[in-house]
Length: 450
Image: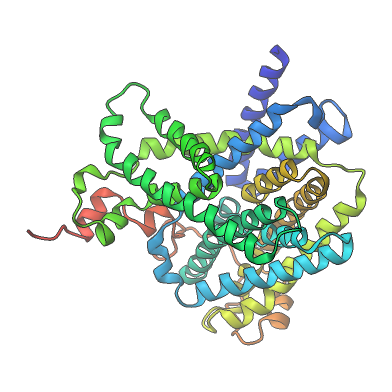
């Protein structure tokens, strides 16, 4: 037990070290964490997935809950206004195309049922905001390009979660039921989960002021998230979708109140403060650090064929993004920026947690799905990092000339880290930019006069 506690402490310490190196070198902390897990697991055989037993499944479920809630919390409904045009078009077309192509390749290579191939396609089509945002901050690209990538990463996360969970729900019911009945069951469970989450979100936001008066109040919100996940499943809903919807409500409560709940007392509906958001940031960091090491431990290096398929899928995702970017992005975006948009498609924690969840629910096919997606995550992060580094140094101009011929060539100077990345002109839109904090919202959107 002492060695286990020491092991966890060392991993969390290394997680902070790798995260700090990420800020300086732009090497994603995901890679060293996975490599560390691979060394400890399949290479040196210090620990194996079987060593975790039931604790591994519990840890995976908790990681999924945290990721889903945090994804919903960071998602801003207001950002959809800027995505009505090229952002939404790029996201939707690219997601559907990548899902279909990846599913076709996987089904052909592994000879698995189509529904499992589609699950892999839906997960691989996701892009990781947590990896893209720091990488993009190092590149001097236009605000428009940054906005497109930010919106795409947020929307693909939602698309991937919803579609993958819907397909998983259908696959777990077997192939003896008609497609119509499966669709009806999925819609029913999703509908119950979303309605329950909306009611739970409004209830919790209305009593949040009273909750904050209690001792250790910050952890109560996390406890309530766990209740939303479990209770939604007990009443016939989908706990994962309920958790995601609850996070969306918690992150957009001001907008929901202003647009749809004007008759309710505004003072009773509060949003999470900075301390509470920081708490969930820390929780996500802990789970991310431990989970990517766990992911490396679970990776089966003996299945070289699955690793090769993972590399092929990561390359296919990059290649087939190119025509979508070429035709869905405005011609005002330069070739170099189009290359950046194409390269910024790494998979991350959402994909990893979904893969682990599927492996636990589909014992036979799930292990194959998990290995393929883990390999895709590793190679996609590596390829995106290498490509963005080369673009930053002024390389890969042939990519822009060959793939983005509709767009004009940019400046001849190489891309360098932006010195003014935090300025209003180049700042990457995030939760603070998409929805102002309370003082800013009060200044920019004064309350209606009675």
